[in-house]
Length: 114
Image 1: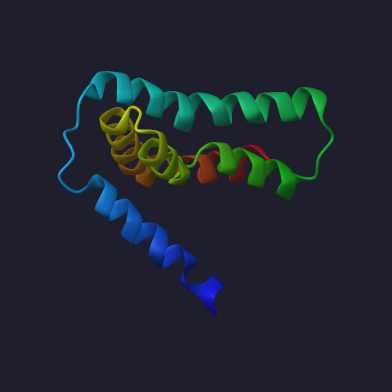
Image 2: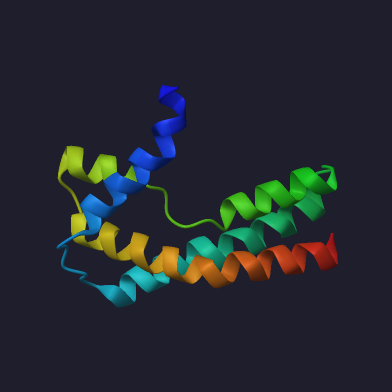
C-alpha cells in the first residue's frame, strides 16, 4: 500500500521544489536538457546497434530510458547537500517540457527503425 504512493509523493515533492524558484542560467539548463533528451538516446541506440546484440524491446527500453527528463532524485541531492538548486530546478523544468514532444518523437523513430 505504501509503494502505491511513491509516484504521488515524488510529484508533490517536485512541485514543492520548483515552487518559487528562480530559474537561472536557462541557456545552460537548455544545453544540459538537450544532451539528456536528444544526444544520450541517439548515442544509446548507436552503441546498441553497433556493439550489443539485444532484443528489440530491450533496445527500445534502454533508448527511451535515456531520453527521459532529468531525474527527480537530483532534487533530493541538491536539497540535502545544498548545491546548484536553481540550475537543477531550471534543468528539471526545461527537460520535462521538452520531453513532452521528444519522447513521442523517440517512440515514433524507434518504431520505424527497430
